Image (cartoon, rainbow, N blue to C red; front, side):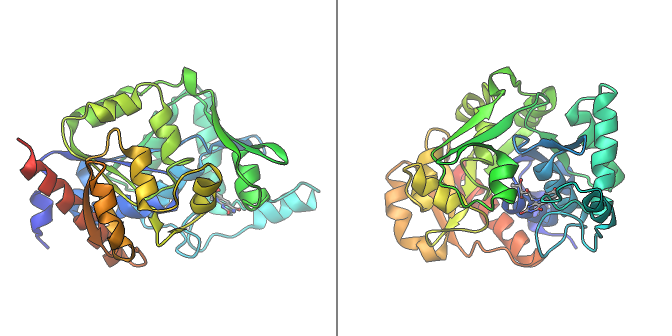
Length: 325
Ligand code: FO1
């Protein structure tokens, strides 16, 4: 069905994504008619090695979501996946705290094989996504290894140890991105930013999902100097994270747990933010930061919701372009 939104924006769109929230918005943008004009820059600082395999949870969440095969109950993993392999790993006496489905394991096997043969993560991701029929370009934030480390009262934890094994129960005292100094913006991400008319920061955790992308040397400066509008969808609604520990993490690190707190974190490069109707009263305070605010229902339960939120954030970008001199 022809839709007006498919005529706009004229160029391509870059969206920044971490896990489930960012993947849903990317899917919404694709459903809104941008599927072949969409570049999704994805956090890879959650990546880790398990059973000798390279696992890239956020890349896979975005890929499975765009391919229409994500498990809707969790947002990650593959719909209908089974755990026979994990069961056998358990029989061998190994810990199985990270749930890896049988079909999902195929992704990790092939990714690891290609990386060991010398391919870049960007190349491997493009191959896997193309095989699953994804037309949007899924771009790792960098090809170098970066690891999020969480400082807690119990000591320094690797990200998945904090997130999955210990179920985010530890207070976060600090977040570090090990290896970030060696990370480089890839030629593919450079090209995506050069070709895009809009950048959309997805509703992902600002500290551990969007944070690592912004920390790639030069990336934040690229956003500050971006030639078009940079807009975001708030991942915090009514004082709570849509998913995961972003609310507790923001609080323990001294940030306000609200779209205003999120806007402050992005203030140096953000032109506009879409906030939920439940937070409408925060609009004037955010506007005082020089950020244009649009209020909408931002909860994404269904595919229609995803498309609706994507359209709302694109409308905001369009208004900002109209307002440009
Ligand atoms: N999240 C969980 O809470 N528990 C799991 O066992 C788990 C397994 C898993 C396997 C593959 C994958 O791609 C993602 C997986 N996730 C799991 C999600 C993931 O740990 C987080 O969503 C991200 O790292 C945070 O963005």
